[in-house]
Image (cartoon, rainbow, N blue to C red; front, side):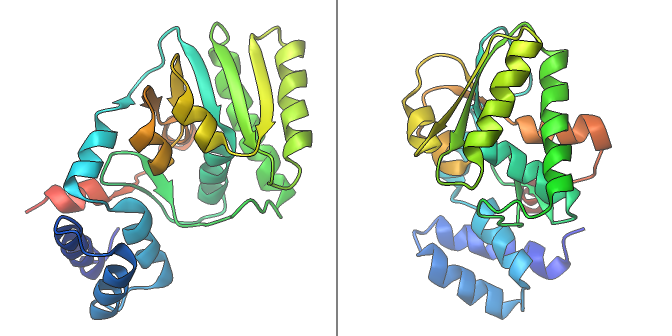
Length: 223
């Protein structure tokens, strides 16, 4: 559960963002006022935006995949799931998308967790085999090439219509896409993309572990 101090900080931070205050300085101001921890400040940074920005992103969210091409921001999905498995705080943001405070920054030091996240993702695909999948992985992230090849082999072995690519910037690639559904919780991609967005991390975690996520959106809407 969010502490009462964090809930107050969320509301104060949204108030300032709606009046165009600079995010970094405002997080420090609000965080110091309520003596927030590092993780709680990350909740503000990654989970709270202006009312307008949150509304724009929330309108793009869909709750189930149709028979579209599925475009996957692969590391974004894997990192969110991995952070949950590592016990890091994972929460619903003000735009209704699931985010975390783990900040792995491309480092997968726990190979057991990496394998678990990979298996959870391919289990989802096996249950939804009729769709076409295009995976984009961040080329600068360690071992992204090897991971991409694992997905290619998985698609071929299971006769799934799927492709996997390492690219310098999945963000840029996905923002430019004009057909399909994007799977990500990256706020920049969601804000700027032309397509609907499916929160695959939330779906996988909810259907495998039935967690009770803390919600920034609920904190903002409660009296």
